[in-house]
Image (cartoon, rainbow, N blue to C red; front, side, top):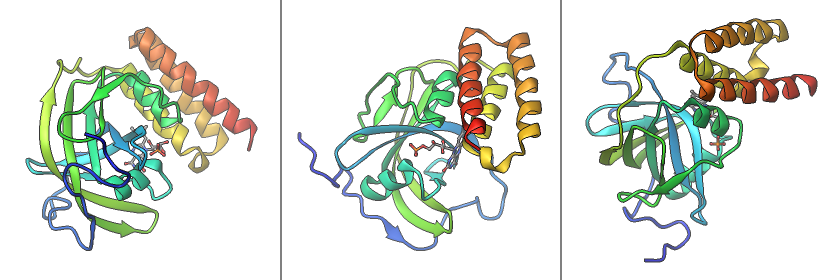
Length: 214
Ligand SMILES: Cc1cc2nc3c(=O)[nH]c(=O)nc-3n(C[C@H](O)[C@H](O)[C@H](O)COP(=O)(O)O)c2cc1C
């Protein structure tokens, strides 16, 4: 069935106001680093790494209002949370390369990453605007699973940290960026595969370009 601009399967209507289940009633919640997939008004898919929290019914996403993910969530409301150990996808999508392999989701109009372990499909029910960030509280529509998570690996964690640094470079003094990159390179050399090497090289090139523009 054709989908018109701004509509979705769940009849999404964002309700401004306070959230009823954010932050687990005062208990600190684990933030999981994921890739959030959304669609725009023209059904164009978008993928961006985002830290989320969730429980059995709800996912909470906190995009910066400057992000495409924020705009898409506001316009369309639907999202898929992709839980992946493929850090090359995290690195690429963090710095604006959205050319990643994907396929349609069966719960929403969004897309699933082809190389992810688990997926949570959800629809935004509440939005709380908090200055630079918005908090979307999303009801879970369905979950699916493709494969096992590979397990903890220091190189993968280093690439995730490097990806975060790449998206927040303005907060880091130049010398600190250099020191952090050295540390991440060492971890990737020691414990990574070619996937982590490629991801860190990509981020390194991006960061050097950005530093030259400072
Ligand atoms: C691991 C990781 C977690 C991130 N978490 C968030 C987040 O919770 N909210 C946010 O706005 N940006 C977050 N970012 C930064 C965005 O992914 C980045 O700004 C991205 O370019 C936004 O893409 P978009 O404009 O297509 O939405 C995170 C980046 C990484 C690498």
